[in-house]
Image (cartoon, rainbow, N blue to C red; front, side, top):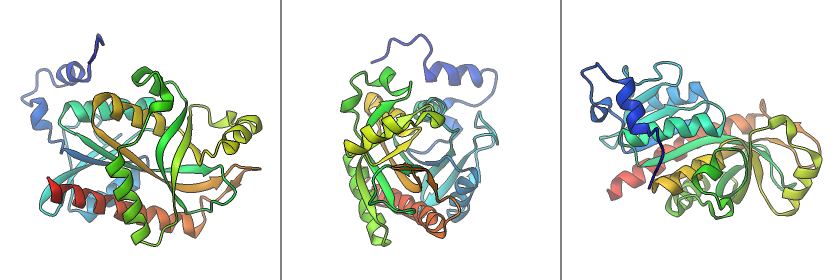
Length: 256
């Protein structure tokens, strides 16, 4: 599959060289639930009786926790903002044993019928960042894992959240979301804009692992910028999003 000179397996071996720890002994579970919010990862670990994996190579900068859902181990990971750093850590988690990645983030809404606190589940992407085409050059074919999308949507609606499924625009340049680009993608029916979804879904597709994101609408960018970061709906939906991911993990574990 890969002709890369440096692989995540080689990197992990280098990082743990001289220790008594093998890659398998790092302790990464098959299901990894992640977030770009540090305190939210800690919250999920607390909810599941989790403990930090002391010897994870990112330490407390991007911590990894192991908790329990239905008596089975699930990992919780913090990621840096942006597709490149996120996918780098996901690659290393995959090399250490992960095969499913469910991640909570945020998005700026592009459609006028969307409200702060709505949930967006990306099914496809508009790739405007640098990571995704290195995994899937034909970026219009990038897709989220269908079962994860279905279950995330069901669990969100069970919690009376408003759910939108469709494409999101992923960019590296948050201060270059121009009026022209916003108008173009809004006209194409793209739901929102974020930094990571294209890279995350492309990684999953290339590596044949299950990936899906669930995004809370944090602001609106369709006509002019309308922030909603301190809106109670944003906070409540983010908290419910944690419950949604835990429920999806429980559903997956029940079928394994």
